[in-house]
Length: 264
Image (cartoon, rainbow, N blue to C red):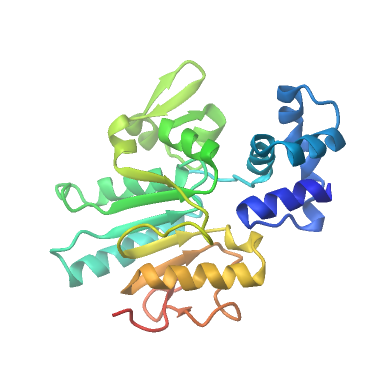
């Protein structure tokens, strides 16, 4: 078990808390079947010998829990922040980064939201960049393909009908919607940052899996690419307080965070 969780941390920076180690055997069962390996111990040995198997183990252990419009109030706050930022600089197209985008529900939700709110402003709807450490998750996100269960989680029927087509037992996003998002592979603490600066960075329920040092590194990296006046969005159980000096609670948007110092 220790070998497998160490592989996860080495490849992604994420740690598996002791009280969640029960997940390991459950989430690795499909990989065991796929590889024809009969035990967790044998899989650990194979992962040490094969970089490809190690990558697949790390990918399987990542928590890719997500849903459309997860915590709907957060999306309302993001929309309010982007509207405020755009009002101050109307000639500049807003930019949003969804960091740790999992299977794509968050960036797709953002694309739907701003299409609805900014009708008639198609050339100025926010640019959305979405990144994840998992190539498998990104492939799912780019496909825009979701199960009936996934499509029903947080997505009202009117949006489902507007933006998705039924294909057998799956629902597939309109290609035009998917094209509005630039999906990129990225490890938050080690890979090169996306080019340019962002008005909003969403990194929800990702940093809690990193140790304190790597969280500080991630916050410092975010601070270098967020514009003055921009906002950082974290998960409901996450905060910058006591974690970093790079961000502070936003004075304008309750529950969001702003860079502590303007970036020249």
